[in-house]
Amino acid sequence: MDFARLALSAVIGVGVWTYDVASDRFFCDEAVSELYGIDAAEGLAGISRSGFLANVHEDNRPALSATMAGELVHSGDLELEYRIYHPDGSIRWVLSRGHTYFDESG
Image (cartoon, rainbow, N blue to C red; front, side, top):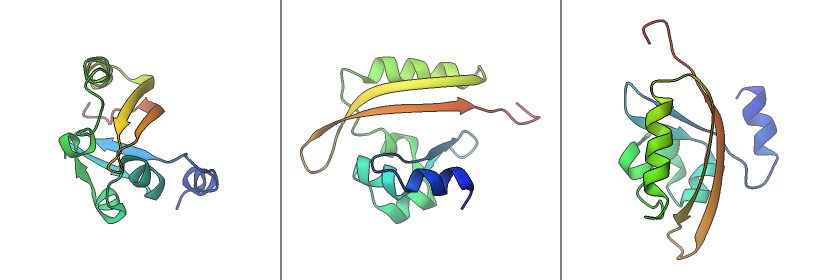
């Protein structure tokens, strides 16, 4: 576990996710899995983009999709704020901050 993940695991409600474009899968830690209501083992192994985003509130999908599409062609910082429907019936707000990186092949 790298230092950032170790530090974040000490804070309630904060987690880490990574989206791998080549495999079209999200990988997330236990905190993000709990937030989204997905199985922690599935989050570590990788979940499809459609599965990861399935519970996003319909009013937030257009803006979220636009931001994510832009980050697939532009490197840099990103911030996403949206609601999700948790399987327990609650609606949760998510504030996601990150950075887009490209490898040498783009």
